Length: 417
Image (cartoon, rainbow, N blue to C red; front, side, top):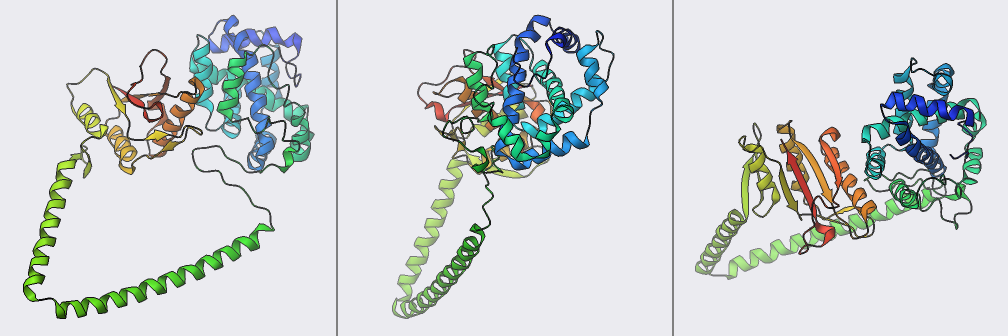
């Protein structure tokens, strides 16, 4: 087992494994297999804080202000029973996960549970206990690491090439790399980690970087220049509108009355034709106790609406959707129509008993597929759907992709009543 931080002493190893297997209600062999991976994930997430000053300060404040009693941790490492404050240890570790990997927990749990015959809940609960061990270690054994960010960066940067335990397979290592987005941190060209932007955040939203102080005058000057250009454009548009009004008055004086009537008839017909075309291509739907809304007749929302509204439908429904796509390089959601996620979440919130499974595809492999699934889950959660109702499933052999549709455009929604 890795001794990167020498946090778990060899003589405590067997006791911790035994206690973990009792707490998690899992075989000791399984815990022994997963423990090095938990260890690697914790260390990798700690190294990520070399790129993120805000989360480093969050970690520092939490560990120093929310001190977990040492006696609880010591009982985990030395006791042969499990009669100690388990909940307190788990809650402490879960809070650390919220700081270090706030949007990656589900992806990591899915990754490990798919590669080992175990439950995702086991992965997360065990990971929270290991986080507690590291939190107690940083507070009591290496407090100077938390006291100075420069010391923290220098200390953990020396570990970047030996971070993963030798017992962790290369496949798992690469997947953890991709989920935690560690490529830049482990890039050999990054000689000075302190030079890298402090406040990066790899959530669904766009990355925001704190600019140095000397950028501020440039930023202010840019705003002023933009305001001046906007004023010039506004003046030009107003002037053009005045000229158009004058020309229109002159035309009305010249064009005969009968020609104007014909023009009005043509415009009226065009409006009527446009309304007819719109009615032919759109369909009006309504959720229970909601307002009417329109969606394209080719939208998968119509099929979903029919399934959710039909109480006689008890079998699961798999809906293949290609109304949005994923960027081939970044896996971000692209070209999603505004109505789709809003109406989908609106309907699911009307039918609280529905569970949703997400199947995503990628020609880059399973890790890319998992990432797309959790980006999609985050989008649905952002629209107001409870994350407990959504499960990301790797397609494998369960659901086959449609060869007539590019993989970047395919998603299968599995609704279960």
